[in-house]
Figure 1 (tube, rainbow, N blue to C red):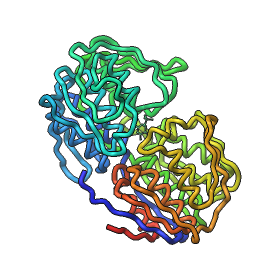
Figure 2: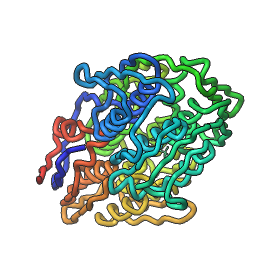
Figure 3: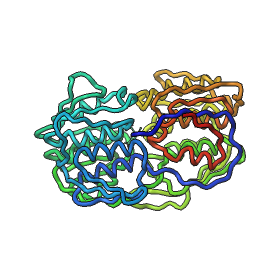
Figure 4: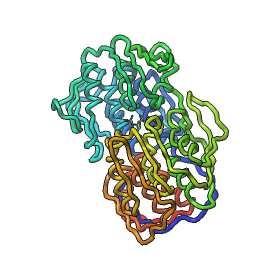
Length: 448
Ligand code: S3P
C-alpha cells in the first residue's frame, strides 16, 4: 500500500477508436483465492490474480496471520495453506485492510470463528467511514466480540469466539456479508444455513464447491447454502478471469463515443455480475458476448461492443445486486443519454468507498446535469451528448476508485476541464486503467 499519490488532469475529448484489449483480473475472485488458499490444506496455486492495492492488502494481512504466500511470476502465486482455524496473530497486533471492504468483511468472517484471536482492525480513511454494523451483528451471533460496544466503524478491536456455533442467515444484497457468514461457518460447530433472498455474486461458493463435505447448495426456487463446519478444505488451483466491473468503464466509453468499437478478451461473465451488460443491451446497447467457456466454475468470454445510441435507462431494483459496482458509470451513461433515467433500490450505494449517490450527483452537476434522489431512487435528467469544454470538474480525495474512473469517462466524452485528486486510488482495482486508456488514445496529464 505504497502507491504515491497523484492528481490527474484531463481536458480533451477522445477520438474514435477500434481496438482489442485485455482487462485487469477480477478483484472479488482474486481476494477470495488468497483467503480460501490460506484456510485450505497444502499448497494452492492462484494464477492470473489481480495485483492491485486491495489484493495486496489481503496478502499482507494473511502474511501477518502466519500464511506463507510466494509470488512465482507476474500474477501467479503459491499459497501455503494453514488449514481451518489455524491463522494466528499475537495479542493486540493490528490488521490494516486498506481501502478494501471485501478483504475486511471476509477476513473478519474467517477470524471470528478462529479461536484465540484478539486484534485491532482498521482501514484507510474511506474504509474507516463505512458501517460494519451488519457484519458485527452477524459475527456476534457466532460468538465474536467487537469493542468498543455500539461503535460500528473501524478502528475496532475484535475478539474471536472460543466456542463458535453455526447460525441461520437470510442473505440480502450483500455478497460480502454472505461470504463472511460462509467463512465463519466453515470453522463453527454444526451446520450454518444461508437462505438467499437475492442472487448476489457467488464466487465464494464457486471456489469452495469441490469440497462437498463442507458446502452443499440446494436450489429449490431460492438458493440455500449449507456449510458443514470443521471439515478440511482441499487446496485450490484457480485461474482468474478478467473483471467485468473494470471492463464496464471501457464498454461505456465505446458505446457513447463516435464510430468506435472494442473487443475485450477473457472477461468473467458470471450471471451474478452482468446486470450492467443486460441492462444496457435492453436499452439498445450494441454489446455481444463471444467465445463463452466455463473454467473453475466460472463462465468467461470476450465482449464485443460498438458505438450506438441508447434509450434512457430504467433500472428496476432487481438490477442492483448484479450491477452493484457499475452505478457510477451507469449514471454517466444516463447523463449523456437524452431523457430521464431512473435507478431504483440503490440506497446501499451510500455505504460504498464514498456515498456514490451524492458524489456522482455532485460530479454531474458540475457539467450542468440535473438529478434528483428520493426514497424511490435516483432520477437523472440526461441531456444527450453535451459539449462541456467550458465547464470544470473537480473531484476531491474521496478514496473511491469507481468515482474517479466514471469521471474520467465523462470527461473524455464531453471535453470538460477536469482535475481528479488522488487518482492513485484507481490502483485498488484497476492498475492497468491508464495504460489501456492511453492505448485507446486518451490524453491526460499526471500531476505528482
Ligand atoms: C463485493 C461485493 C460488493 C461490491 C464490492 C465487492 C465482493 O459489496 O460492491 O466491490 O467481492 O463480495 P457488497 O457485498 O457489500 O454489496
